[in-house]
Image 1 (cartoon, one colour):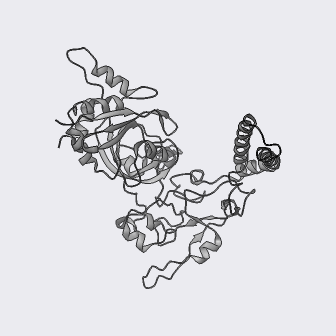
Image 2: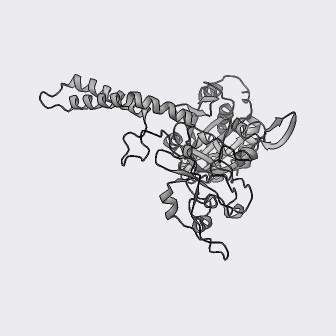
Image 3: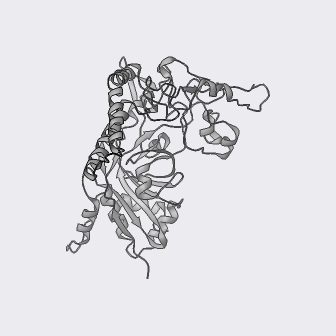
Length: 410
């Protein structure tokens, strides 16, 4: 007899952008050890790895994302943090020292209740110090410790010494070996003394900063280019394009790895719940927290996203309003598959379950979930209904058809 699929709602709700902080995740277990995790929400655009993702504040066309999303703090914001640091850090550090000495005292040692209280106070003191300066305990001490209160993480960044030591030879006659070029304006140096690397004329986004991904799409580009060259992070067939769009990919949060067991290069199967459009793509970027549905620009566009244009002096221009691409106006159902499972093979396995007909119903309830709604409770209420004919949930026809396209009935 065929195995049934089983399901379990994750106790923690996840966040999709700033609009939805109650995304429900459901873990699915199917025949032959097949696993998936499903959730439904909109989409945020992840432009990391794009040649025009980040650039100088005066760069035209306008970069697709702001430098603040790459780690940068405006000088006035950094000054605010420095003023607070100068005023409070010494006293906060002294408090931590005093508390630590009391905890470690030998004659007489603190009793158990006092230890618990001191541990709590020490945690609070460290939290205060971290808020004043996140780098206060780093070893070796950052070169700009106590002066700069941010670091680059969304762009490739190097110190001037690192740039002098790095060299790349294209191996093409007439193209000399070169060093990384840095944007060394004073307000662009981070706590570690690093500046953003500028793309050269040989790269697809000259003048923009190099925007990295955790891994390369192509073994060939990985072999041919250094990690401070934008082409390292592009598929081989688009490295010479003026403004290539990365292939579809998703950004994997640490929270999703924890509850779903998925890792970089595992696959996502996404369904536009209104149109039935489907797309399969891998996780290629990563981040922290309990977040879902941050995907590349190409995934956004292929699943129904639209380019938004700005108006200047009453006329529509060709300049893209990139700051609005992260507000998706459509909802999607996502299925993620761990252990490098093929979505088609996994859906085929789920289709062999003894209760396979219930899967599109459960996922359709999930596709209609918004806010604090509980898709599992709604599904189980539907299951237990005494009605002679149970009405299907909204989006059922679209979800079922899309699942079949993805391999569910193969």
